[in-house]
Image (cartoon, rainbow, N blue to C red; front, top):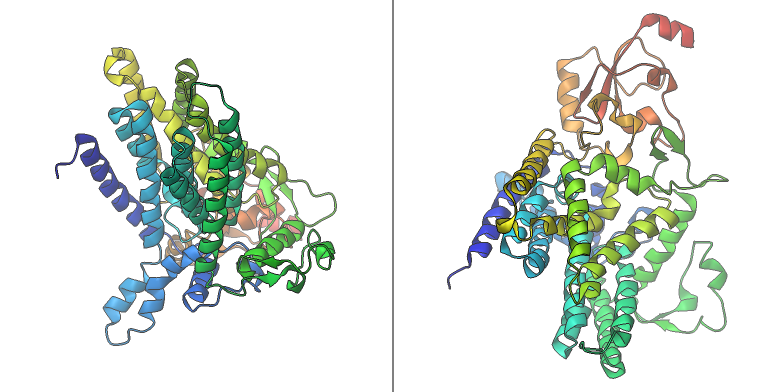
Amino acid sequence: MRLSASTRQLLCILAIACVLDAVVAKKMSQTMDEGVHLSYGVKILHGDPDRSELNFDSKTPIFALNALPRLISGHIDNFPMIRRTLWSLVRLASILAAMVVIIFIFRFVHEWYGAFAASVAAVLAALSPNLIAHGTVATADGYFAAGVLVAIYYLRRYLLAPSNRNAFFSALALALAQLSKPMAVYLYLIAGVFVIVAMIRSPGTARIRAKEIAVYSAMVIGLSIAVFNIGYSFDRAFTPWGAYQFESDSLRPLQNAKWIRKIPIPTPYPVLQAFDKMLHVEETGSTWGNVYLLGELRKPGTPGFRNFKTYYFVSWFFKEPIPLQILFVWGAVYVVRHRKRNFLFNEGLLLATAAVLVLWLSIFNSAQVGIRHILPALAIEVIVAAAAFSDFSAASRMKKVVLGGLVIWLGISTFSYYPNLIPYMNEWVTDRRLAYKIVADSNLDWGQDMNTVQIFLKNNPDVVLDPDQPVAGRILVGADRLVGVSPKDKGPLTWALRYQPVSHVGYAHFLFHIPADAVVEQK
């Protein structure tokens, strides 16, 4: 079968993106969260999905894909080279999920804006530092982005053509998305609202009838229960509500409510168990460090704690490439000016999906630890940005030059950090040695640069790493330790923050020269 030109271009872009992502994955040390995700993946492979451990609160069965090579390697004793290779492949499944993100970005854009814009969108996604950085680690965010895009793609198809076939694929995609990250539950809200809107939309379109909504709802419920049970090995499914052991202040008062305590829950025990633990962690902040933004440190779980309502907007402004920001605004203007008949169920659906996620996390979420939590919104940003390339062949020469220049700028900006892309900051940050004044945690210092740090310390034995007390001479401090994100009980190194770092190592550790008189003064 002969492939179309656009398909061949997509395959070429995917091949390049896969190589770029593999280099990033190979370069990075294990991040702070990956070990826990892999441990839960191993539990899933052993048929034990229980989430009694607090750190397993938001982990899902999808991590069995990441843990599988490592589990297999543990049974290979006679072939050490094969064992080492398998041990290093824990991020392979995440990279494949990143390719799924690019494919569905391409598909959205191809259907709306044409083949050329779709190829450009794939290039933008392949060069996006945040999509690369968090799509190549064994954590949930890349899977979440893929799950959201796939679910919304098939939901859109159902809204525009409400057949039983489209209903099945939409319901299945919604169910599978739940295995990517617990936050994917919000997709049910998106689907419910848009299905109701489709039921009452103006005449002249394929209006969804009450009977079709009933069939769709039954498919969503049935497939969700089935996928949860398969994913969690049918573990204690249909356990009555009253038999659960809740820890959160939100659910504990309902533990023995007479009207619900005998009702069996059709999903496996770990599903509701995880929901309860996430509420508990949200209340206490027990599994993550302090929250930091623009030089201000806040401590979760303490009286009067408030999250940063602007956290994700500030992170987007400084961490998302400026050319992508410009193209997003340009594309949004194009979409507004060229609204199509079914705008609500095309771009409107995507924009609503992104907006609800960002607003929900900004208003209600306390675990503001990185831009990675809104990765699906960043993928949707690329789709809208690609609208600027619609009718490119008919554009003026100046417009073509400007659009081409923005793509080149994106490539230069990304490769100026490559392959160290977790700490990527755009050109609004003119001095990379001062990035810690803006953000920290997984935006900057997630443990990904420890291999680089160890090499530096070996070559510079006089340098002291992360001292708690004032030390004269050269010290190297990670961003999280420097500003007080973690350990959360120690606070920032105020004595070091009085000085400006002379350099950085891996973009997330900062090298200071502390004069001797400063140490005497502190004592």
